[in-house]
Amino acid sequence: MEVVKASLDRVEGNYAVVYSDSDRRKFDIPREILPKGIKPGNRVILTLDGDKVAKVIVDKKATEEARDRIKEKYEKLRRKRQVPGSD
View 1 (cartoon, one colour):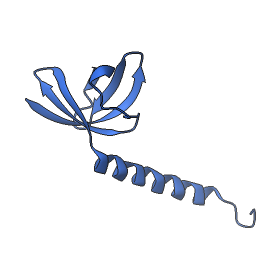
View 2 (view 1 turned 90 degrees about the horizontal axis):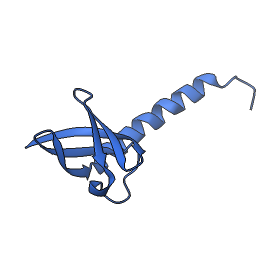
View 3 (view 1 turned 60 degrees about the vertical axis):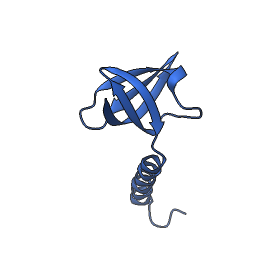
């Protein structure tokens, strides 16, 4: 058994497309083994049995940390684009 940290990229039909963090391996995971309420952008922990995904767990802490980093970067970009005196 191998444990892989990854991100849910998108859902296409009956499969979710997930990419591993370390080597960007792509996994097409059947929707029926996904946790309820999972969304694109969620950070996940995959348990592999050989080359097959046996289990998917949402990593809530890593998901929140990623959202916070993205929000911070967005705010920095937004501040840089503001023109003084235009508000």
